Length: 189
Image 1 (tube, rainbow, N blue to C red):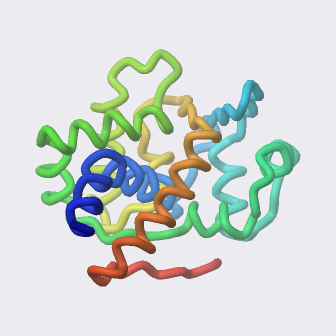
Image 2 (image 1 turned 45 degrees about the vertical axis):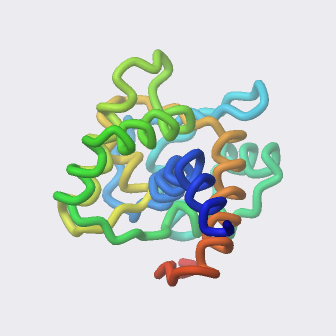
Image 3 (image 1 turned 30 degrees about the horizontal axis):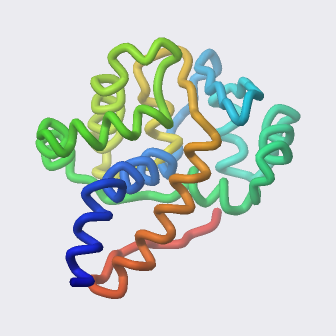
């Protein structure tokens, strides 16, 4: 009975939340100053250069734009830094194969509500490409790396959905860890 609830929850929201968490936790790579991340949160919009986000992930140093986002969203900077730097092992072939299945397409579709383009055109293909590219060099995915590999100049992140996904991911990991061991490292940089 309990297993059925977990399977149902995982099917409905777990995959999307897990992928969003992975997407949010990409390992840092060299940022391109022209790339821009546009965060939206309850009607507010704030643009942040990928370089600023990379600096924050590496050192904890915030820019005025990041300060505004953290304060407006009432987010803990240490937690956001952890999310940006959290690394997930990801075999490139497995990621590619899984994301090209019906459940994989569903996960990409749900995740593209959080991370995507303004027009929402080709979000699934772009997200799939960014995830595969992120895994291809070292078989590890993190949010910074995902954002760096996203194939558009501007990436839009829905902060409200991201915060909800973070909360749901934490609950999912807690529930799932009762039944299986999930290797999650909590490294703060």
